Length: 165
Image 1 (cartoon, rainbow, N blue to C red):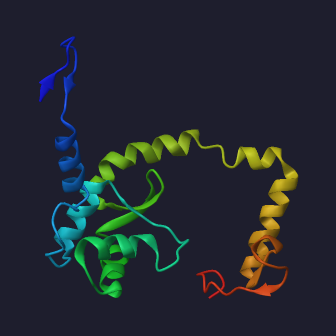
Image 2 (image 1 turned 45 degrees about the vertical axis):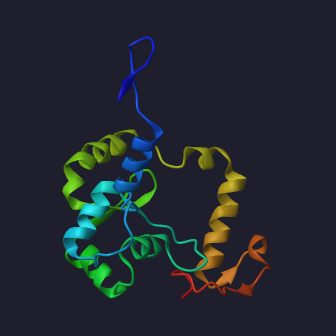
Image 3 (image 1 turned 120 degrees about the horizontal axis):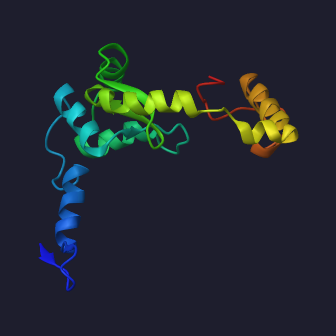
């Protein structure tokens, strides 16, 4: 590390920043270790959370993220680690994420603060027309039909989403 010309702040070489980023994201080395409960927990801690994303082309984001770091693994095993063993929990960290339960004490404060400050979807409540369109779209999707914006009124849902099956 080198100090800047005015000696007020350190200057960190780009190579050091890049190395740290790759290490913390578990991308510094080729996939070599199989996923285990311990490695899964450590990975979730290091990256701060494994983003859940239902919008996909190949697969949901958290499945692909783990595959990219650990190689092939049994999805049922992952689901058991998360939903039965509770190794990770779902929370809206920076986005919907699987967060290590070891981080729950830190997130608990944010959860309590959110509960006090959250006022709901106030922007939608102020715009009744938008709210009604959103409700209609959700209702339509629950019935296994796509809304006009998705490709045509009444068209069967072909995405095999969790809502439509």
